[in-house]
Image (cartoon, rainbow, N blue to C red):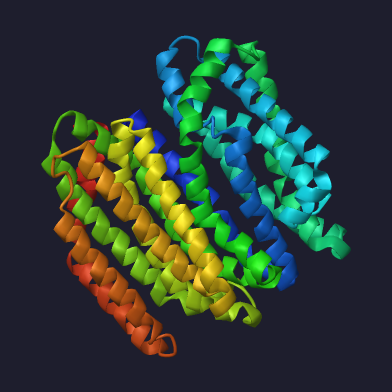
Length: 479
């Protein structure tokens, strides 16, 4: 035990922080997946569809109402206003609350129209607005702690929320059996809202400021041009469920959400990897160490490919664990959605260079075009082929997104940062492999035989994998 404590103490603070925030991101991404087997058995497909519809609209509205102020612009502000972090944070929160107030006034003025258009009750929409007032405060605190390499409080609070959110949801369903969807949605978020309220008080007590013309102008100037980009990303990931609900019904939206839930685990892994990968890329771009980026990216793409193919291989069994038999048809949406997640990761490789060079217009154009394509394809194919078509439109949308960002990346930076031929070859292998697996869904032994062979190959090459992991950690340390 003493040796373990000593080994932990030897780990540099930035690495400890990185690992902690990877855990936080993974918990946030996987909580829905972990609790799905519980809630799909406590709710009907229609009720479950309503809860997923709420989450989709929440993520969509959050872009407009909170302006994503707790993301990139906040980190930039902490750098540009060094020594004034507490005041700047409270002024950012002041702007976020002001925006939420404006949208609340709009909602209550046109409440009936908005409720009919969205398909959610006044209880859920009012509670959603409450979230928008307070939750950004917790996001500001997490990002501030991340900026300072402080991780203990965010990690502890995230673990507490990870446990309490589903417990409160179960209690809500038991207390209000006649309105399970509303009860589950509201009660699941009570712990998070509570943390948000406490965070608001902490930020304003420490910062002692609500409005600052300079700071508000700074935040709006940076983030408003990026709103179409953020919105388009949400459309690519969330609009499918909204459109399925409107074109078909909530039950089919609930079924599709199960397929997307599986892919969300992949997305959680991607997000966790990206949180550590981005600093590595930026640092080496600045030092013009292009070969180092290319070599490590190739290995990373192979790892991501294995994860995507592996998830598709076990999808039938995962669906059976996550939900009762009426959801099983969702298994046919998993392969195309996983292909979409793969190309989502590929696009982030190219997008990093656009962010690095601060080419916000290019980012906005590429992402918006892909989102519009996704909506058009959904409108055409969902009525014809049903909700499974949404998986294929998602794959096409993310493929187009990757292509668009690659084109703009080449315009911005002429250096051969990535091995494009390698990426194309791996992408072809991934797509063919995933579509081939669809024909093996009725053959359990063959699928798990493939997994066994893959594990043996990994075991035989563990030294190379261990070497890559050690080299990666050294890069994070800056050695």
